[in-house]
Image (tube, rainbow, N blue to C red):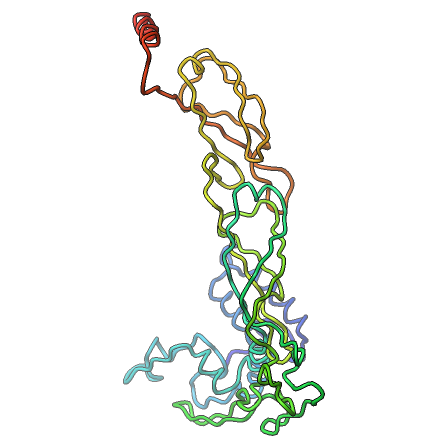
Length: 362
């Protein structure tokens, strides 16, 4: 049996903070990316996975030696007998164990309290938000209208009719769990599952709300504002805590995840925090140089100096005219590529002038 306490170097009565500190220290020391031993790192992670969870740790302490013989003892999630798929003596029939973490969780109730607590939480929601490229230049608020669960106004989220009380669930006696006995190839096991009567709440309204039928929430439209920082980029996700579906009967809401999509711009293209644009110029402008007025993404106009003798494809850089750095100072740059503009139609005078240039070898 693996001694997870010994692996992390902590005592059996160590508290959560001591376990966490021990894990961080050992994980940093043995991380494969830093030249550490990969197997040792997996062992440390496995030990922390169990001991950092109250439910898993309790079951490990209680059932750590529940397996007789030479087989695995305790929740070693990556174990096999002899070799993958082989029986203990190395020959005979094969097992398809699948995810043993799910097996142990089902029979021993690993992760029970934390998972049940999370199950009460409202659903997380992800939506897409399309914004113009120029909107990334500044922080702003966006009005969002979203069809989702909203708190029931009649019962104010309690799930009970106004004036009625909340009573303890008779089936689970307020624990939110009921015992269940299951049998498998490992034997018979007793586990705790979410109470189907109160759905893990441990209590029920004496009289369910007539509007929400005891859930404390109904389908509706929620209008709210979200903050969009400057410098957001394509596919970036912004988390809005508590803006997801509210939990049943007043439990905490889920979160909203906004995925940003940028509309294509007719002039500018974005790469990281830099902007790129093409500037079509006549041959004479490239050869002789000069000044030309252009506008940046914000619409600010300024004079750009074109060096004489510039070749098509030459790139000019304007520092600080790009996109603001996300949650940082400064901005990217604007790169302007000089492009030769070839006229499709020429008048007689233009043709004569070009013929003269041709004769001069220009």
